[in-house]
Length: 493
Image (cartoon, rainbow, N blue to C red; front, side, top):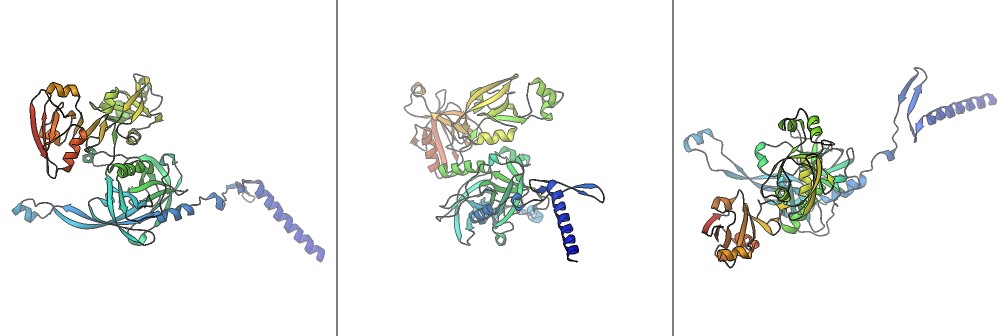
């Protein structure tokens, strides 16, 4: 009997060992690959993920949640009374204003209270309060905003705060795990963490054509991490706990998350907030071109049979790059010798696939910086050195060597020979005039500004400083290029 039991046990043990051997033989790196069902003679693929095969996001989550804050905003909203009866008897009413409440998220980037969020979160704010993860609440002030990237910088009066370090968003890879941290749906869901992957890079959003008059710097990171209203301004974090983006928008037909969320890349955010801290405004380089991606539509515009035919005749090795459709006269590209019809392939050795990539790359420079632009011209590559000018839309911005912007004009210290020729002892030269208050008031290229609000000026910064100090109006006195005296003024508002 004993012998019989031992025999049975040995048989069972041998069967188990045999089954283990079959399974082991079908295993690659510890995970079974294929298992055959003897009854049906079918092969089934299996995956056996060990715990180590999953990304460990705990460190990133615990670090990020401490540095992400809840932002509550009271803002002024303008509205028009929409009452047909009132309009019939009294006409259109003057715009009315009211106080509205809103909320979003923010990320602490410095221990002394600097917090980055979205411009649309704090736009028109009259009061901002910030609640940390430890439930402490502070009043916040706006340091600066940048509507072009939808980034804003606010500050609270605090020290020793937890922060998130900036990561390199250019190094993100498709399929990489990321976390979205913020306050979806308001105060009760503060510090919510969701996970997803990088779904796409370099995304642009659809806009109302009327908005295209304003600069839009867009190269969004698209993820499938759940983001909802209230997440705006929150952190997009990689698995090592670095800030790689600021969550900004969703695409949804319902107003709630539908699987598509978008973040401003950290490399763009870092440059913007650095300028806001250092200068109080963004010093944005401008190349001065109109560009078109290399597409079938462009091929038809250029009268090629197809995009392949265009590529062949232009001697393109690929469809990466952008076609220059227009060069702004007097702009950075024009002064450097870039021409209409050139195709930009790279800037400072970095290959660029489309207009969005060119825009983001140019935005990484400051006015006055130099860069080498590789273009394709008549089938041959050519390298051109460009000195970036700045946007003339912001007063005081450096727009070229020794030039600064002033209400749509560019100003430069007047050469001594020009002053001598006009019999002047001091003055500032207007080197270019475009749309703006100076043009509307009567300024012309070549004008020498001698006085601003009855104060003598010798340097461009003198003009900017005096105008900035003026409470209501700016009055200009000067001499035109042909020697005639000029007097004009304009209101600051």
